[in-house]
Image 1: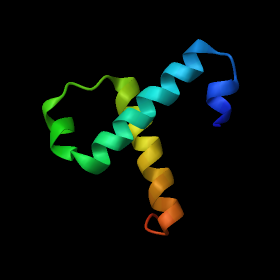
Image 2: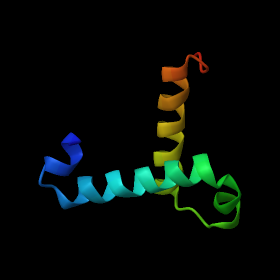
Image 3: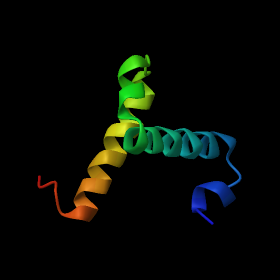
Image 4: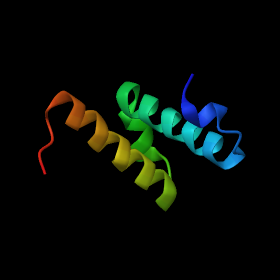
Amino acid sequence: MPDALISGSHEIVRQWKRSNALITTWRKRPDLLKKTELTTGDLELLYKNIIKINKNKGVFHE
């Protein structure tokens, strides 16, 4: 179970859920993200996770 879910912090759990929802949408239906007004927080979560995914795949180099 992810640490975020067992942390007991409602805010951390909320961010974890939102982050996973955004990444799932990005992977399966990126067209939907173009049609949605994302908050600055959503964009930050998405950006951080995309970088993390690409680093794990060896695609992104700083």
